Length: 159
Image 1 (tube, rainbow, N blue to C red):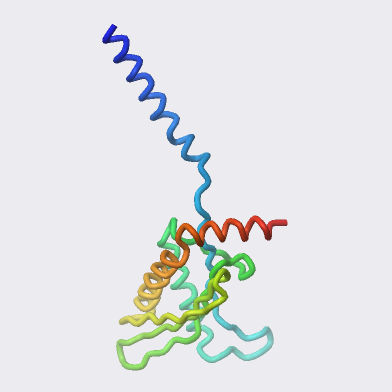
Image 2 (image 1 turned 90 degrees about the vertical axis):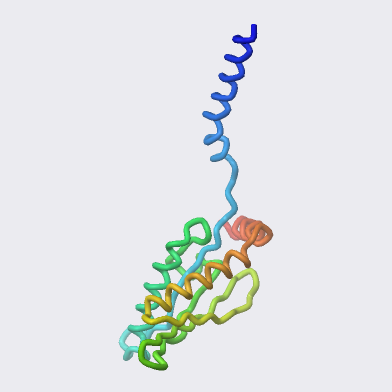
C-alpha cells in the first residue's frame, strides 16, 4: 500500500511539473513599456542640422544599450507606437577624453519630460551610462500600477 501511495504521489508531482510551463504561458505578462529613440533631422532637400550625424550615431548606440535590457522595455521603430520617447538633444566633448550625450525622456502616461546626461571616455561609454540610467528610470516609473495603466490604455486605443 505504501509503495502504491508513493508511486501515485510521484506521478502527481511529475504531471504538475510537466504542466507548469503550459500554465505559465496562459498567464498574461505585464506589458513592457515601448520605447522609441530619435533625434531631430533635417527635412529632405535641406542641409543637415548641426551634429546630426553624431546625434544619429548616439541614437544607434543608445538603442543597442537599451536592447541589452530584455524584460524591462521593448524598442519600437515608430514614434506613434511608443509609451516612452527618448530624444537625443546634443553631443558634446567639453574636454579631451570626456564625451557627453544629453537626452530628453518623455512618458506618455505622465505627460512630463526629464533630461538625462551620460558622460564617459567615449561616445559608446556615454550611451552605456545613459542606457543604465534610463533603464533604472523605466523600472522605477513602470512598476505594476503603471504596467496595468499601460495595458488599459492599449486596450482602449486598439482598433
